[in-house]
Length: 403
Image 1 (cartoon, rainbow, N blue to C red):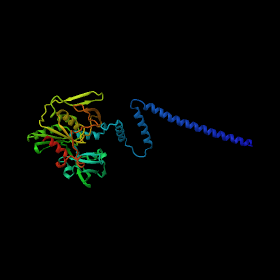
Image 2 (image 1 turned 90 degrees about the vertical axis):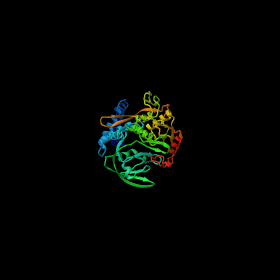
Image 3 (image 1 turned 135 degrees about the horizontal axis):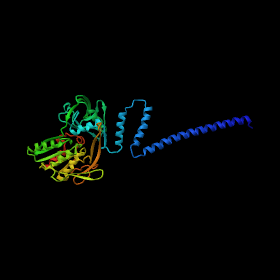
Image 4 (image 1 turned 120 degrees about the vertical axis):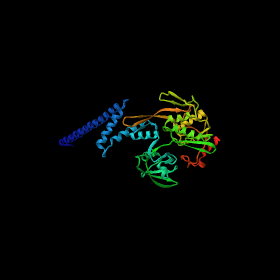
């Protein structure tokens, strides 16, 4: 039996434990209330239709990083990354936020000149490598012995995979007169080159006369002035008793749609539809030929899996309007047009603004242009620009069709 003293002690313990329980309960309630308040506050901010969601969340993250993160913070770089991420969230690989550096690079490309070593590159998805598909005539790459078909393994000692093509390209470009170390793989052997970067004016049209008076014009991209280059090349071939023409659009990733349409004008009857585009409101606009064509010989067109965008537009126009035979493999399937907006700080936004269709209203996006005559090259040549004639079954077929 418990004494009075023991009972008093027990009551004190009970009161002490009870008080502790009450204190703990109060603290827990306060904590829960705090987090509930934050959650409710965030939800009320973040559910708005304006930019409060983004600014509030970024502000909270910034506070935490500044108070806890142990290294220096490059806030300017973080802001650029945040903007890029916001645009990336639209889930369209063609819609992009462009930094000032990237915007300048885009302008250089469309103007047809840039500082670099002078190579055309593609992501060879078959083995995830960066493949050189062409060399710019007169470039430093050509002078040191780089060849089409070489695989770029390293740039300045850093190894790059095919999926990192954009990053590798940025490093290859740079200040004129500076050197870049390029490690390539050729016939399973590594070779290293030190190449000086140089300002290069890109020639986008190459031409020559083949046997049987068959002219050959290769268009590598659609830059400012490409259509004039094409007209000059055709007129020069015409002086040599031209009887037929092969237009090579292989590995042509596109460029300025206006230049593509200007080339189409040289072959399509005046008044015929060149291109149909549809905007966000699904309103269609039809562009028609306004010029009198100058090409008056039979034509065949070669395409491959790297033929994209403006080059697909041209191939579709020439088949629908002129009934020219398309030879090769199915094209890439980029049937959308981007509009580029520039901001005062030099950055920009490239936005998918229209989908385009061939004159017969055929869809190109994610479908591509299917050739009339399917001809596949051996795997070692399918991504290469300068293929020896004896190995170029697509070109041989194109010429034979004309003969």
